[in-house]
Image (cartoon, rainbow, N blue to C red; front, side, top):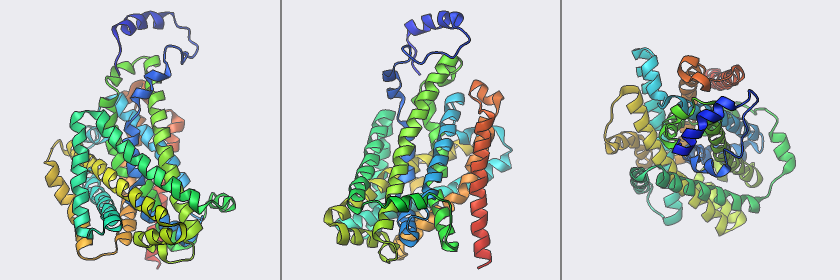
Length: 433
């Protein structure tokens, strides 16, 4: 955070004369000083509407109607809490989650966390590359393997915007996020909404083992473990010398207010997009077979709502694939640099994580099935990022005045327990057939 010479001169006097009562939020903290601090959460939010979300949400809506809508809402609330904590960790310490794990955990644990994070990165890349390839095929007839390669190249181009500072990259990613939102907003207007179905879908329930698989996939696609790492790396540089500014109650309040608003707006938009996907599928494809693949969804939207809806879906899928792929590449760099204190060329890393996705496309595997299972893998990676995050943000020796309140830590513990429990239930369902 930038503090002018005038503010620096006035601040000590202000603190000395302030009463014990809560500090005022205005006029010393005008809104115009908060808005420029927004942005990191929108980069993270792109991962919450990546192509894996398309596959899981449309599959869930088509197979079970509004039944799993509550999973999307619950997962989005969890995402808000988690991303708020990871952003606060970066603000308070000036370091990212992976780096702090390396500094404070035994070496074997650090290596284990790194290995699972790399597995998550591969699953993430699979979803993003496959989604971008399918979108290019739907829009322009590009063969799937070629479309996957194009998506990877575009990710490099978008990531290059970071060399000009955080703002250009954030603007590009936020613009692509808005494209996704507008695409589904347009389609939702055409499909309509069953308010009774929405109300029923807010009641927690499952409908057999397959619904548990899809619920786990929705959770993995919404609470993305790799952006738990990347968001903590985005906030320190984005907010300036937040560690110094946060030593005062007034400075800490200002930064927390900006960070929470950032998360609320970004994750709120992502949550609305995810809910729109499931609602559209529930309205148009329940009981049918069209939503078993992204190509089927595209064709079905064209049949029922017209060419405009089909194009809007494909464009949203393309924007999602391009944006999330670049964020995923950046997350991979953050993870390796943090856990191992090593950097490898972006091209080398991209080739390693790109190979499984291209293999699926070249060998003719079903893209939608691959997308759904990639999200299930991501769900299993969430506890390995979430548990260390809760542990670190609750430590007063590390966080000082930024440390979690007991209620926040308890809420985070409940979230972790729910995710671990859902994954355990999924394993049990498969073992028992």
